[in-house]
Amino acid sequence: MRPQHRTGRRAAAAAVALTGAALLAACGTGGELRSAGPAPDAIGPARLWPELPPASAAPYDYGEGETAHIPGITVPGGDVRRVDPVAVVRAGLNARPDRSSGTAAFPAETVRRINACRTAPASCPVLKPYYRDLTGDGRDEMVLGIQLADRQLSVRVYMPEPSGLTRIMSTSDAVISVELAGRDLIMRAPSAITGYEYRTAWSWDDQQRAMLPTQDEILRMTPRDGPGRRHTPSARPSARPTADASPSPAPVAPTAAPSAPVTAERR
Image (tube, rainbow, N blue to C red; front, side):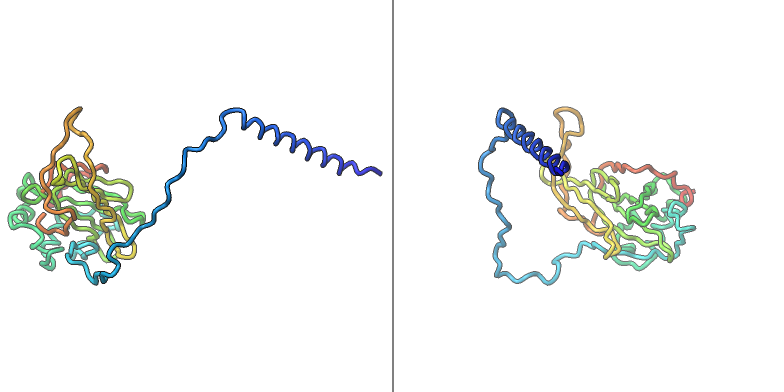
């Protein structure tokens, strides 16, 4: 008996072969791939001065990774929207008086205005808060801005925890704008080079349990004031953000939805 199934398979294989040959022939008739020329050789990183010993410590302390528990502040239901932002700032002023959390972080005039927020709300330097889940734990953090002298801005982020409230970011700078993009907080600041700006992205780091400046770069500015005009920023003291050192802002423009106006400490 003739093996019909084998004959059928051979015929099918022959048809496939003929079809493939036809396709290959068609590829050579037009629209074929053409060489763009030789590709440049890949050049790997070359280490300069390999005989230099590695640094053992950072030469300056910028305050990255510094956190602080805010004493006397409770977070009802773990919801930072129910916490009075002015009370949070004042609690920080009454805490350990160091660069990160105490009165040394702010000029005396700013401290006076913060303490007078209840009686003189119009001059209160604590801006309305914004809320965003920056740590990825499903709960919002509170982002606060505090206006300082010489058009500087202190930006702080607070995270709710079972033990209360923890500050996970604190920095001050002259700013063009502050933005929230996904889980990043982005600060744009003037550069001493006309037409350029510094842009720093702060991101949550699980290991450090703090917001860290994961990207710090200088970029050309795009026209923002209309055709043919370019914003010319003033000089910036340094290329790196500082943790509440001598901080200066142009108008701040966060992108997240603002909260309701602060009322508890401003009455």
